[in-house]
Image (cartoon, rainbow, N blue to C red):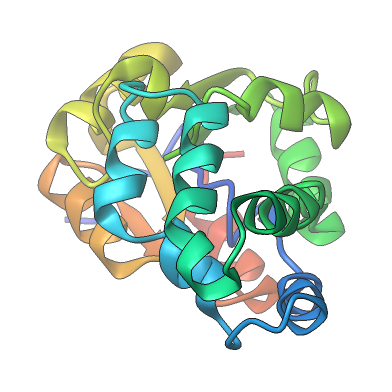
Length: 206
């Protein structure tokens, strides 16, 4: 039996719709005499990251915790905070090809949701990047209190899209999220770049 075509799209933010230039963090690390990659290593450590992704702490509190963890590497709390603040001022860039695809899909009548593990800064980021009106729904883990790849996250996303899981095509650049979506009953695709758009167009009913 042929698989039923998806009638809604759920896309990840970081790594799919938004991309990050690694040179920005590298430049901050060089300026402050830090080991290459240390900002991301500290910021993404699960003990610091999990609370902010589930709304237990704010983005501002998370930034402070990153600065505190960085202080031993810098030797001065104020200098550590300055480094983190400088790094955080960069909010990434929209992938123009993915945005064009989202617009194409929505113009064809397919609902598009943003499915992301994010902090309470997400709405401000979407506004700063000009994305506020580009999506039908935004499913933010810090608002839900549960993050990808939990089944409950994907259930909430499908409810927000008012579409059964088997008809929501999920796109993410992380294997764990893709696997979690499939467990929740969604057809899911591992994003590797704009070359994937041909497949995604074929998988959607429009």
